[in-house]
Length: 120
Image (cartoon, rainbow, N blue to C red; front, side, top):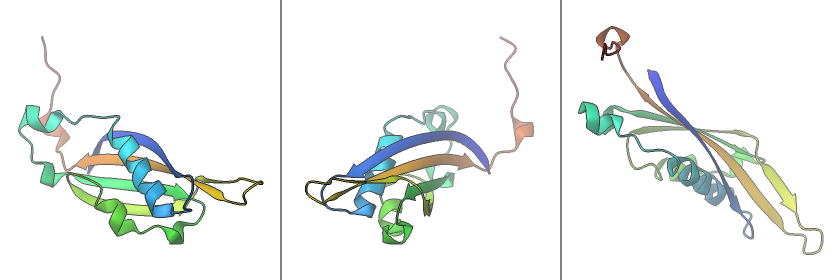
């Protein structure tokens, strides 16, 4: 698989300490930074794309990876959750704000011998 794009995003849940919600928001943030016109331009099928998502949060076991994968509009999702992100505690209320980071990679199985730079 050849990585065509890598986008980064951040998301949070300020009040509910919901790690999955923060992760989904991070994925949405990353997705809103890119547009994959390559598929339309080259008449490639979106279904052939593998989308690798890495989520970083302080408590990886609290993220529902299947719900994060469901946020992706196209491709075959592979979600990995790792230690990362941040938890910020409000000392006055004792509440925790969860901050998640996301790296979203769009990959295709391409033969590099089928491509060449244009001479124009």
